[in-house]
Image (cartoon, rainbow, N blue to C red; front, side, top):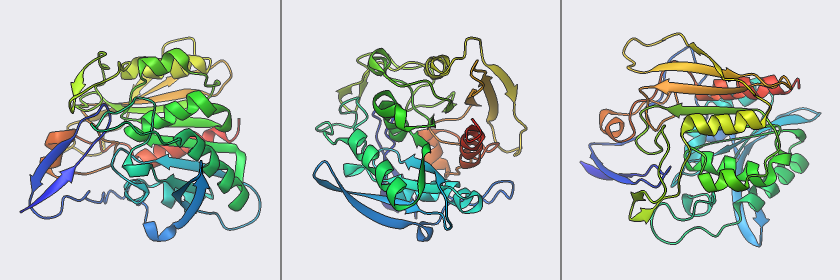
Length: 324
């Protein structure tokens, strides 16, 4: 038996679990869904941003012309390689001809505007500036289409996606986030332009509660900022995009009888025609769908829904925006 440190950073939760053998994510073999990414398909690029050497992974597209760009932000204490292996977006990028990019945070944690949520000093990295530089570099180096740049992140990466949108959203065509909520302080000062959004949250998330979090909640010895609920977060972005009514929901087909969760898709129609979409995974925890963990890890993060592949849903949403 060996000690494996498993850190999930959303509202600032950390856990150490004793497991036998490797505590790796077990690959999903469901033939309904595309395969997860292989790091061998990625190129490693180093740039200087704000006087600091930073790194990102990229999977370019062969051929002439401009290509859509999907930037994927990893969760807290993870890295670009980790998220690359957790998503099917690299597989879909090869199939459909879009550039996939996975930047690396400094020290495994994005400076998403919340301050310190894991103990120790808060990050001072200019991650908004870094992501701007990544976009410029991919547009110049890999024929990325500056009018079709998409950003997605989960947990700490989801918080960073919203933080970036509030400060540099004019660079994005659409965005998506998972297992993260909008901080109240971010809501108050957000300067994001209208754009379509996709959201993914589990109703039983023990890390970033679906119902939100009160100001001053203690986690890891740190007082946490107030978080809107998952529903209020989605309404904030959808209404900013011109949705004036309640989202219309439908229950998605259940693919695995052993899966105790179920998926609901809610669409908030925009007057401009570019709708926002919320996936609610009832009974699921702090995990994007179509990930499989062992029993011990599930006790910490909860269940992962198996009715939806996150990469497929996210790219399907982004692809639909290319016509708008």
